[in-house]
Image (cartoon, rainbow, N blue to C red):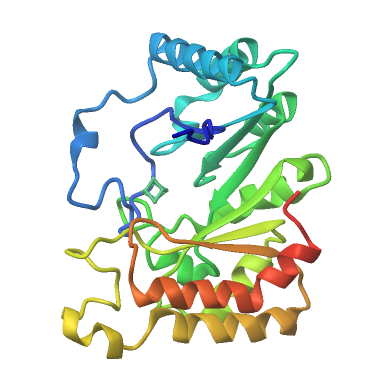
Length: 283
Ligand code: SF4
């Protein structure tokens, strides 16, 4: 039987294994898999060269016109300015060819994001996605430093830079991890204030053994338990029209398949997002 071959086009490159924040919903540092403790801090030059080479080999074999590489962590900016510059130059030099265009992105908590990094990203056309969980109160519920300090002001300052005319073209959007204890309208308003071209809503990472916050009920009661999206879907839809914004929103399911939550999330997406995203496709 012939099988349709769909080659990978997106690669998430883990460039640093630690983080300068200590968000208590973090799926790396705060969950049962603690194997990060034994990992090297920054990506070694040989590992980076090997990874870039294999991506290039894959792109050539499949004659890919576009390859997406996302710098990820931990916190990727901990690689430092020079380390990041060397990595970006390596990826450009190795992966980009006459056939293959390299689309570079970074997902960051933005507390270290400054003009020096943004100038570097402008040079290499690296799009920047920033993690923010809403307004100050919503964000401060989880996204704190190890000593309990808020990260909000630093992130908002960095987003101010990213929104400025000089760097606006690099702004990929916001990634928001949802907590049903937060007020959805406050979350929405906090995100919209940052004028993102796109918002990704993420559920806290979970498994059947470790359910997300608010869904920790016995299996038999799950269908009747207050739904995550019943509170979080209808109000953002109203909020959307209240603010008259047209932003593409992509709810994402991370690691928690098969629950009615997924169906409700999908319905929500169909109801309040799909039409908007058709009119305003992701750039
Ligand atoms: S910024 Fe991201 S990687 Fe760092 S602790 Fe928070 S969720 Fe985890």
